[in-house]
Length: 397
Image (cartoon, rainbow, N blue to C red):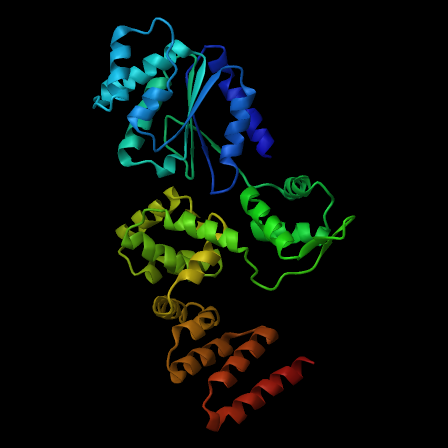
């Protein structure tokens, strides 16, 4: 799938190589999905000069990195010299200088990496460069980001690996066939993200869940909720590096504890965030730009796990109570998921459980609710609650 994307991008760059068009491309996707790998394959596969710079560049770095074509106009040389010395060059002149230099290097591809880490000023420059470069034959601007960029960029979303691609990646990493159970486990947890898949593979081998006797690899199941510490640290670093205001952080934490069907999430996320509608939409946009959410879902389930685990006990209690309040009338059965974290008085818990049991239609689910009722019932009345549970269980046999 990702090799197909490489081919499609190379095809889009053919008019640049032949100096017929100017092209601006945006390669985007969630963290670890393979953006850098895709771009490296593209740049390796096109027969023209390429230049890669991180999007947090300083003007001095950009000026120093730009090759100097022969017969460069004197005014461009002077502007580049100003930049190299750290002198301020106004935006229109800066864009014109870079574009003219690239035009004389044509065919050439300029690549900016990790645009989501760039400052507002740098984003403005990249946007203006894109508009200018699109009009220059034989020049391409290609940028990587976690979210889709607006026009004039032509966008390519990097999709997760399918199962066969994931298996091939892991087998190639160890140079040997691997147990089907291990491959299934990694694919289920990493969901086709190449970086996360490799982190799982390495940690599973180090911890002995995936082990070799020198001839064959063997598998034993990790405990429930197993998470490589290296991957957890990586995910925490990704989320902590996001520059989020208080509203965006509130929306992120609220979404993290909403482990509910997406139709329900859409109904209650805003209210659980406790934000105004305008602030909530702005927060969602910030999270999308950071590559953490896509619409109403996390870009990867592991983000939800790590963010939820980092929420303090007091904050979790507050959020759980809001979830309870939003759900108890809509779906009391789902609301019972938040009983433990909300830490309410037993009378409130029992009222919710009675409401949930009354609408429950599945015997196994009813047994779970009755067991909770036994747990929360005062000792003096617990026998009666336990008897009701026994009757339900007996009736299922």
